[in-house]
Structure formats: structure tokens, C-alpha cells
Length: 367
Ligand SMILES: [Zn+2]
Image (cartoon, protein in one colour):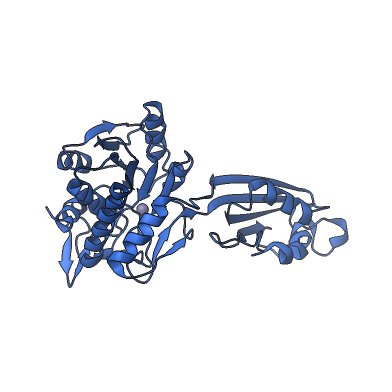
């Protein structure tokens, strides 16, 4: 079965979060020489497939089989893959059934590996991700099967296949500031405390500001204001309260405490409350043989020198990194994820499979 055939099969499962629609049964049967370990929670199925070939490194490939709903307006059925002019169309073609197909095919080909090879799959990545990769890793820790190296096959390429992979991700911190004033008549501003006027000069100091200078791996962390609301949609009453919401995609240089101190500095003399929620921690795999092997394999297959990036939103790699596991992300181009008529180049899927084969091979040679 070719990597393209595997992808076509995976695309035919209607695996909208948290359903796998039978995909896991099919994958388990496909990698029948691997031991299957399920860890299910709250209606979410998670599958770990593992095989020990001998003593050596434990290398795991990870991903999600769930997809976001297709939405309206497709030119083909999103769950009946269509091939047209070198592309395969279907929901999940880029995000990320092509990645899953590529590592399944590569693992099927890999005999006489010296260490252990594994697959970690969830059907809860596109949702709140609370019962997916995270709980499977907890389970793997409890049975002493955590991998040392992990490749997450999310789509990472930008303009061309092979131009970028990820060695980390920024974190995400959401903030809500509530400013308290005193309501009044617009004609008597001296008798009220208008929270809109209070924050007007502060806004200029905080909106879009860089909270650190970034480094070789991360862009600077910026404070991005996402919403400001106050008032009664009238012109003769000034409000007593204002709510301001913001988000910071933070590097490892800016913590929640640093943001709290920054706000305190700029809101001196203002009556306010701040609520901060860290929805993801930043992480980075700075130096690892996995990074070297992946970069070298990409270069050999594509003749491109890939850049290592930490851009974009969050992914399940953050849960893997939390265990001190060296983790990288590499997959196909990312230009139609979550949109209609999602598609992937057949040449990309085939090249991704070749890259994963080479990465596995590199571990073998090392041992
Ligand atoms: Zn994804």
C-alpha cells in the first residue's frame, strides 16, 4: 500500500473531533506488528502503537486523526477524497492526515531498527485537547513508555515543501483588565471618573508593545489588544466600568508574572483588576540530534535548507515538550488548513514519507 493510498483511506473517515470514525481500527490493523495501547477518556479515543526492535533510542511519531468540520461550499465531498492535477482534496489533507499517512508508511517499512518505534494518535487536537495527547502521555509515563524523541507531523512548510520545520512554539496568555470608575453626566466630567479617559494615555504605551526582544528561536512577545468595551452607546452618560482584553503569544523570555508587573507599572493610580490565563506554555528544543537528523533529511530530499521556526498557534507538541522529550514538528505546506477545498500536493506527501524514512534511518546509523 503506497503512502498516497494510505492518505486516501484516512481521508475517507469522517473523523470530526472527537470522533475517529473507525480510523484507529484501520490503523491498528495496518501496523499489525505493533502493540496497541488505548487510553480513552471522556469519549475521546487515543491510540499508542509501539514496537521494540532492540536496545536503543525510543522514537515516536505523533499526530491527530480528528479534523475540523468542513463547512459549506466545497467543490467536492470533503470526506470522499478527489485527485485532480497532482493534488488530493479532502478535509484533513493538510491538517494532518498527510502527516499521519507519511509516518505510518515509513514505520511499516522500518525493519531492524535498534531501539523502539512508536505512534501516538489522538482524536482530540482540534477541540479543547484536554483528553487527547496530554492524558495519553500521563498514561505512558505511568507504564514507563515515554519516548525520548518525538516528531509531530503537523503541516509546517510555508512557500515550498521543505522550507520550514518547528523546534518549538510560543505560549499564549490571555488577559482581561477591568477598569473601575464613577458613572456620570457628560456635561459634568469633573463629578465622575470616566474609565475611557483614564486608559486613553495608557493605551498608547501598551498597545502592540514588544515585551521582550526575542532571540534566535522566538520573535518578540507582543501585547495585542483584542477588545475594548465600555459605555451605554449614548452621548450623555459616561460609564463606570471598562473592559479591555488582550493576548500575548509569549516566548520563553516573557512569563505571566512579567506581564502582571508590566500592567501594574502602566496602570499606576488606576482602580483595576487583572485576570491572566496561560492557555499554553512556550517551549523550544534548542539542541538535539533529532533536530540535526530532521534538518539533514529534509535537505537531502528537497535540496532546501529548512529554517527552524516557532511561529504559529499552539499544537500538541507542547504536551510532549512538558516531559522533557525532544520534540520537533514537520509536515506538508500549510496554506489551506481549516479552509474549504483543503488539498495537499501528491509530491509533498511522497517527499514527507521519504524524509521520515531518512530520519528513522539516521537513528539506526547512529546506534
Ligand atoms: Zn493539526
